[in-house]
Image 1: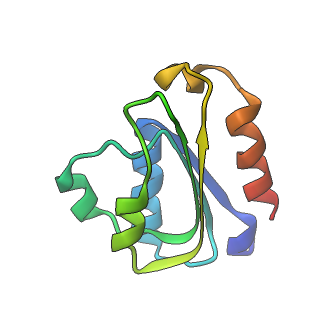
Image 2: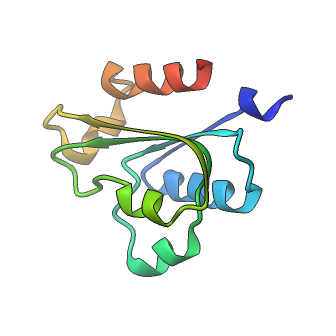
Amino acid sequence: MPPDHITVVGASQGSWIAMLASTYLQNRNVNFVFIAACSADEGFLKMVDLHGNVLSIYEKSDLAQSCQDYRRDATGINGWKEVEVNTGLKHGFLFRPLKEWTEPTMAWAKR
């Protein structure tokens, strides 16, 4: 399978696993989607060096917010997009397959 046909999706703590996969794979052509990902402490930020095509999705009312700090320190990002959704559900926006996060995720995987 060509790397650009692979998309790794992680939500909440699962996104931290996806971030580590991005760091260790170091492949600029694999797609990654991090949903409600970026509320990690400085120690985790230092462990991560993102690679690949990265889509970050976060909820405006959630504690987990923008992944810009991870982007700033990344050495292998090929493509980047960040989407803020506003459902008012805080972290609960993940508990159902809402179009606000499923549609951008599927579109990122198909690009």
